[in-house]
Length: 511
Ligand code: XMP
Image (cartoon, rainbow, N blue to C red; front, side):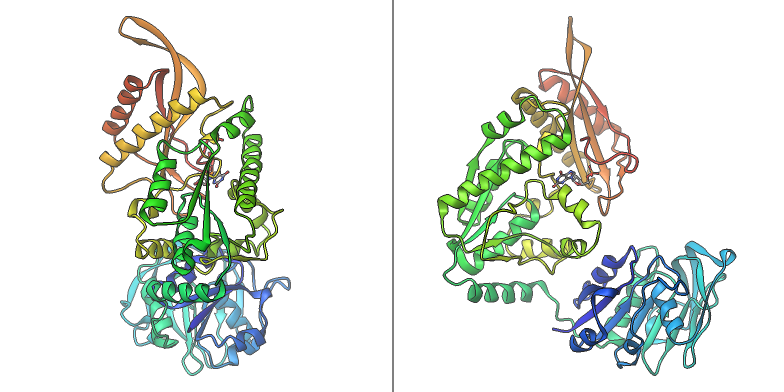
């Protein structure tokens, strides 16, 4: 299959670059610049190479670089921001630092529309700049093809070698014609065919695993989340009932969710699914525990124990299947991965269990590609596009110690909130929205009686990446309906509040 190399120099938008390439149905893979040699690049027969941005200055001796030979391979190259500066620097051009020339944010870009990189791009458009260094002189053989008011060399080309550089970021949506620029590079300049299609991905993957896993027992922990669900249905297509899906219902799921997962995947999709109802076990371990991290740890450990017991009952498992996706693979190659993983793998998989091998059928896919595969496999839309749900579940949304009574109150409140959001937010559904049961009780009046009940908080946020988030400006009518319904329909609640904290400084979850 044809592929584009996204050579990572540490920029923050690198995954976005690869996704933008793949939107054109061309496979792109990200490799850290220090993790791949010139020989590896040559042997991989890439159709094109993109140098990403990065936080460094090219003239800093410690800054990341690459073997100059990469520009002499005859493969088209596009440098973005730092990547563009690096190409200029490698070819004996000049890169300067000048505080008064730094540009952050939107800028008007003027381009030479005859250049193939700018096919279909108007002479003047908006681009997104983020740099303090700038290229002051191009190497021989290179020409300027774009400028802004502050940046004389905002884009350049070496048409003979098919090497291009842009000082701005075509991958971010603020660059009006960024998608066209990347498409021109990938399809016209690199002459890639549009072969990266989810239908063929499914067919190839199913065929491969059918061969590879023939006669083997495969175990998968199904959480009901998108990744494990898609991995399960894909593998089930390949090996049928040799795939054993274990769904541990820890009792901390949203209302009716355990039944929904079971009916969707067991009855609907015909998976070989074992549901383990372990609520009592989890609640007894959590009894009296109020510290959030301790809760997470207990749940993680208990999950592993239940999972191991079920695996032992099935016996002779050869292979473990996981719903790892491409961003997980990229993250695990970086230092920060340790933190991210321990956070998100709560309710994850036992490290101590020994399997002969592990399969990860989604390890090359971005989340939106996983969703597309899910839809093509016939998984219901609501499940494929569901909002994220933390592994420790409602345990981190009942503040303080957890009791069955509190859990039931939260499940009811959360169900009401989700139903009303569904009713009122037809156009713009928040990225994540849920109820939290605070540990605070307050006084209220109902009829002639004084009440003293819990405070429920509702939270809704808008985000692309869940690393930062804005609190959603929900309509007042929605908030009013939610408040009325929660107080009237749920005993033990006397107050409803709306969380107006963005992230940062808040986190999305309360615990
Ligand atoms: P925070 O609260 O860190 O959440 O802003 C960011 C995203 O991660 C989810 N989240 C978790 N997911 N295990 C998970 O699998 C966890 O322990 C966990 N804590 C938070 C959260 O729901 C949001 O989508």
